[in-house]
Amino acid sequence: MLFFNLIKESFLFAINALKVNRLRTLLTLLGITIGIFAIISVFTVLDSLENTIRNSLSSLGDDIVYVQKWPWAPPPGEEYKWWEYLNRPVPSLDEFEILKKRSEKAGIINFGASTLRNVKYKSNTRENTVLWANAHEFEQIRAFELEDGRYFTPFESFAGKNICLMGHQVAKDLFQGINPVGKEIKVQGRKIRVVGLIAKEGKDILNSGGSLDEMIILPIIYAKTIMDIKSENTNPYIMVKAKSNVTIPELKDELTSILRSVRTLNPKQKDNFALNQSSVLNSALNSIFAVINVAGWLIGGFSILVGGFGIANIMFVSVKERTNLIGIQKSLGAKRKFILFQFLFEAVILSLIGGIIGLFLIFIGSIIASNKVELEITLTLSNIILGLLISIIIGMISGIFPSYKAAKLSPVEAINTTF
Image (cartoon, rainbow, N blue to C red; front, side):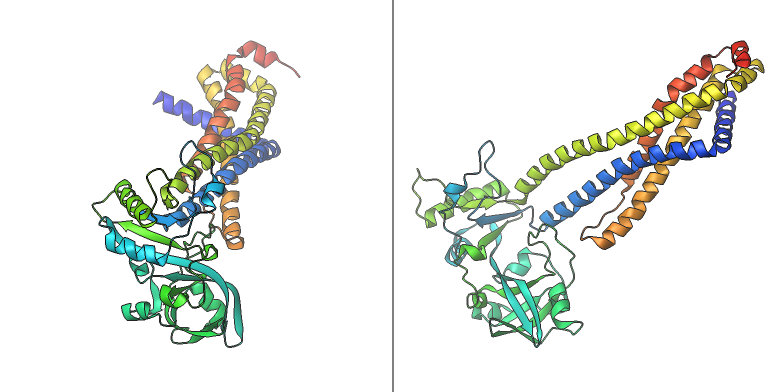
C-alpha cells in the first residue's frame, strides 16, 4: 500500500511539473512526436505495402503450378540464365489438352493467354484494356463472384462463341452506369456480347492478374480469332491445381515427366519449360522486406534518438531548477525512491504523450493517403503498441540518469544551492 501511495504521489508531482512548464513541455513533446511519427509511419507504409503485395500474390494460388516459358526466379544458388530461357517454346493449347488427358495428379487444368486491345461501346472507347482468354475451367481454378449475369456454358466455351465477362472498372469506364449484361462491345471491329459482370475486387498494385476489375474474360477458342495465343506476346501459360491428396512436389514431378515426353527431350537435355509457384515469390518478398525493415529501424532510430536526447536534456535542466525543492522534500522526509519516481514519471509521461500525438498524426495521415493513392494504408494495432512501447522505453532511458542524479542529492546541499 505504501508503494502504491509512493507511485501515486510521484505521478501527481510529475503531472504538476509538466503543467507549470508548459512551453518547455510542448517543445520537448515536439522532438519525440517527430521521432515516433518517423519510425511508425515507415513501418505502417511498409506493412500496408507488404499486405497488399501478399494479397495480390495469394490470388495466384498456393496450390497451383504455372507452366510457362520464363521462370519467376532462378534455381537456388544459381543466376537467372535468361539467354537459355530465351529460345524456349511457349506452352500450347495442344499441351494443355495432353496434360488434361494424361495427368493423374492434377485436379483442375486451365489454359490462359492475354493481350491489350482497345474496346468500344457505341461512342465510348477504353484503350489498352486487358483481354484475358481462358479455357472453360477458369471458374473452377480462379475464385470470383458475378455481380450480374452468368458464366459461359460448356457449349459456348468449346464452340468459341463471341461472348465475354467484364470487370467492374471496365464496365464503369465503358458503360458509365448502364448495366453491360446483354450489351455488345467491339474489339478490332468484332462484336462481343457481355454475358456476365464480375463483382468489384479492388486494385492489384502488382498487376499480377490478381484483380479482374480492369479485365475482360474471353473463352480461349473465340480469343484465337483476335489474338495469337501461340505468340510470346500473349504470354500463354497452363495453370495446374493439384488434387486434394497430392503434394506440389508430386504434381511437379508428374508435369515434368509429361512435358518432357511431349517435347521429346532426351535425358541429357535440360527442361525447356518453367514450373512456377507463388511460394517462390513469397520467399523473395521475405528477404526483401527483411532488409527494408532494418533500413526502417535505422531511419526512424535516428529520429527517436534525437527525441530521447531532447527529453534527457530537459530533465537535467528540470533537476537543476528544482534542486532547492528537492532539498525541501528530502528534509520533510521524502525518500530517494519518491524523488527518483517523480522525475522518471515526468520523462515517461512526456515521451508517452509525444508518442500518442505522433500516432494520432499517422492515423490522420493514413486516412488521407488511402484516399489519394491506390494503396490501403492502415495503422495496425501492432504498430500502435510498438509506438507506445518505444515511447515508454525512450522516456525511461532518457529520464533514468537525471532522476538518479536528483535522488542522490543531499538535503542540506540541495536547499543551499543557488544559481
